[in-house]
Length: 159
Image 1 (cartoon, rainbow, N blue to C red):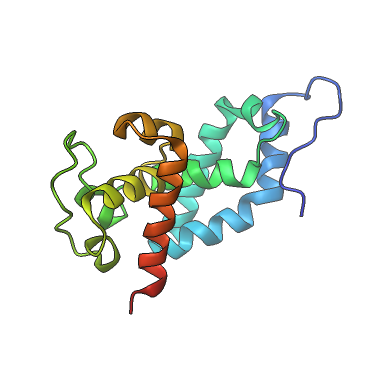
Image 2: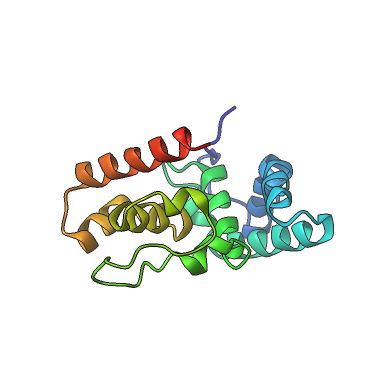
């Protein structure tokens, strides 16, 4: 499946046509993703409408080389769904000292140390880039990747 949008070499015939094409290619998959989070068809459809409404103002971003359109839509949906995820509010990444361990109900995050929690929550729930998290922690991007790998190992090995 080609997840990169192609333009015809000419100016796209308008934002609404571009969004329509984007919708035709990815709406079903994105609706499935959103439905798995909200568990309500009409609510999922409303979130889908919100995502594609926002996509219209960012449509040029979808046509840049190397952009994975579905991943971008999924990230937009994740940001819209941020209030649904219980762990987001409990992931206190605003703590600049990163000393406070997670005290929420997510059993996977509870098993991580404070630095792992900061990296995982920052990247996965808050949509930060590896570079941004690296700068916030004053570490290299490779160190952040290693910490993220540790997080996934914790999740994978948890029972």
